[in-house]
Image (tube, rainbow, N blue to C red; front, side, top):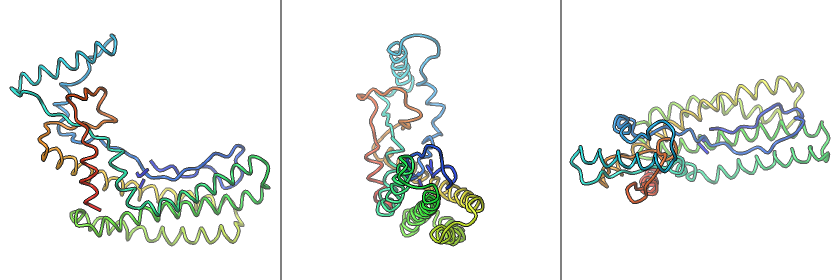
Length: 268
């Protein structure tokens, strides 16, 4: 799931890249817009098109908000914003021990790449260790997702999708077995580099599909938590900070991210 939740898997072949790059641990961060049912209302807040300074357009946006409040007869709409990416951190923090193991493996791969780039490692040694570390890193990433699923399944907050989560976990078992075999092959020594790379690519694709499903489940709970917080605190509208919010008047728009994160923490 990725930092769930876009995956940043190691790229390229386990054979020698000309200029190795530092790899990083994936956790997908595929962020969906929250509360899409209010899209028509959001249009009232759109910044007018055309030229003009940002200050002029922001003032026009504020004028539209005032006009909307007047039309609805409300003293002031209560508007909130949510940083979905930050809220997603609740799920990644729940398996931080597993994430650390994956980060350690990514660091090993990065160090190896730097050593090879500096000429401190031979090509044959680099190819062998690179294949091993890539396979082990993918295995660690899969362990993160399965650990997250286990926590979700054990939580009553996910009772409504527990069956689907269990199905995802069951369908991932062949991937677990195949990755274990790939890691064993890499540790003993890759005989056919092209065959190894083909297998690795296929397993990486399967992992990405699993990670996407898990990300969608987490995002659904983030949306549910945001809606609950919004209702409890009397918000009329909640916008996603990253993709929907261009300008924020802090005196009129409240960031509810911390409230949503506290709500999500109760789920796990």
